[in-house]
Length: 196
Image (cartoon, rainbow, N blue to C red):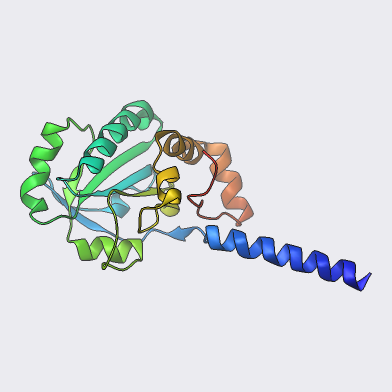
């Protein structure tokens, strides 16, 4: 019986370790200040009560430009249900480029800028190496549920697929799901390995 319990304990511990490696506890979104041309400084906390899809971009990055087009579709589709997409540029001269970026790519959501160091602190990773776009999905209470990894890999690619993003947004917009997840207190940030 001891061997059975030990084997069960080892299996359970191994499974828990694998899950922990793929996901971390849902965490409160740190405050983030960013500037929107013509509107001035905004704070992320001003959007509490909405599901926020926060995307850190370089205005000159083709992948970011394509991602912003997808996010424009999501804003159109889910805005009335409480989604707020926000792009925040962190590249050099972003303060001079974001206004034209928003016009050129016809985005229907706020596009601002902030220093790269603020993005790195918000995301919680090193500024030495990271890829853009970086996507963070935040629930109505200001809790981060989904975040792309710092570096591009198969997990990053899976999380950045349009279908996966849509699934995560729909999940956060669902009132019943949100209420039951918060009541259980056991929610986790979804890993990029979550099936799409």
